[in-house]
Image (tube, rainbow, N blue to C red; front, side):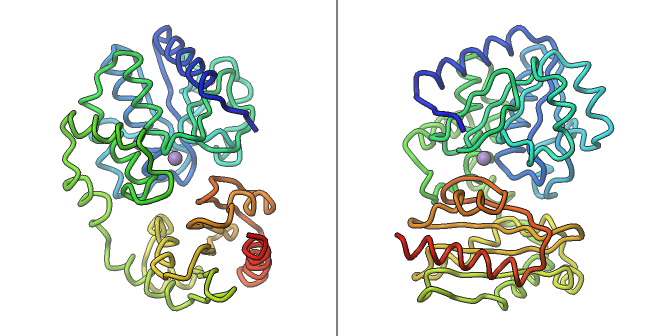
Length: 334
Ligand SMILES: [Mn+2]
């Protein structure tokens, strides 16, 4: 883990800016199962680098939710692991955004380790592996998008053409500026982006009001599994492969569903378990009390204090029992 003080974070940003200025070609990478922050930060950095005269490409390990396709009006990022080596070799610099965990860089660990000298990291998570030769880690940033905006401004690169992508990054990682990570710094970034021409109403429509009926059916099934524990302070929900089959929803349509249980006044902590072909993923959220990143770490996962996750090769029910016990213990301590 990195001990971040503001001064060293600023120095890291300047060093990354320097590396970007020197590079003629850039590959930008974000995490697997990417969210709006990872994708928006990637899209913004790729486009801004292209506008600054660099060759730039994006790489995402695996598919992303279709609702984020609007971030890539021209060239879509590469997603095939076999293509990564060639893309990495033809780039002077590889910038990883919104993660510093090999566990989230599905299948890329070996290729990245072999090229560590030209890998730089821009990330706001509290936990990190030694992924790059230069890591700008700032866990006080609400979103990777806040960091990328500050980087572009330090570089003097145009913000206007990438303002909507950065706004998508910041607003999705803050739950449309509702979560505890919403601070003055991210609101200043948002103000800057609205000045640059972003229409928040149009972005909201694109990101939050484009569901398919199948996703609402999946949500209905998830809410049917809601259980409350610890006098209502802890909620658990789950989705099985059968729920996906019956609803016709896609695995990527679970984004944000975990937050639904926070509608309940009594709830601090939420566990959502989602079964897929290879494992069970657990999504953890908390409002004020429990450090869910610490819980996720006990199970081999990671994330932020208020939003974390993990994967396990275990059936839903026993995993749920172990997670409920761990959260109950944390709630009792608080
Ligand atoms: Mn993020």
